[in-house]
Image 1 (tube, rainbow, N blue to C red):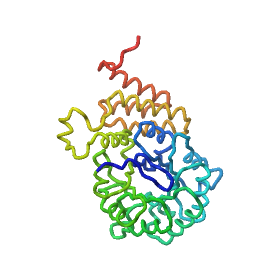
Image 2 (image 1 turned 90 degrees about the horizontal axis):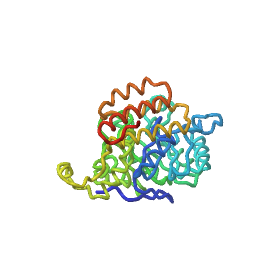
Image 3 (image 1 turned 45 degrees about the horizontal axis):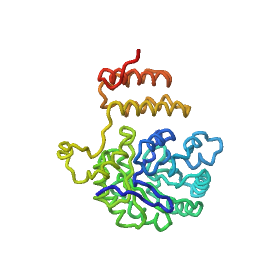
Length: 352
């Protein structure tokens, strides 16, 4: 079954029905625009941002997390916190900044977040979640959504109850990462939990967890009936994943076995060439430099660790990047590496 062409959350149309998951340290404005420009992603989300931080005028990190450009619409701001009034006030500020949606994080498993009763730490206190739902829903006019895990552990699964409560409180959609807090990011995502939530509510349900290929995205929709798919950790290592899903659905890839696809003259989705990879990493690094982010060098090194795995000679490039001291030096290392390979393959002409 193909991923739906579109999804409406409140008055916001998401086209196609694919979502870039909020990821701490990853989904800043540069990465979001980078993904948006590659095509195929219907909704992008900020890094999860502390509601307390939003209300502190001097919190520069929160301000940076919530910085976005006009070409990022539709965009959702994700907040975390445990105080209903603080959450409501922060959501109101986010709405005033021009975000299309506001989302509550009930999924982060990090200890430093959980110990403050944020993220998945709230999954053991549904009444407290209900108060947050009611306060935020009353505070904003834009669609209000929630992203959550199935429960604290396998003995405390609350996803269906939580989804019903969200619907009763007037939330516009729910997104389920089909793992428990105890799992973290290990083990397999339990897609049957997504199906159970979909069966329980009428508002849109977004499925998240273990989508690594276009085939996975379509299989999740077929098995769970979810209205959209959300992709997180696959995106940094394969930024083309959203475009590939769109191609796979448009080209009739559903029902084509891997053997049939290999024998077919028309690929069901495009795999990036080495030239594509070069242009992609150079574009992303140049965007980081232009944005003048204080942690641009760290982000370049982080991105290189994701993207160069599987590239022939990539270990050498990673080493060169890690040893570089500034952004221009990193960009030069990338250009030298790829241009040498592409010239030797006759894809680029040597200068001089």
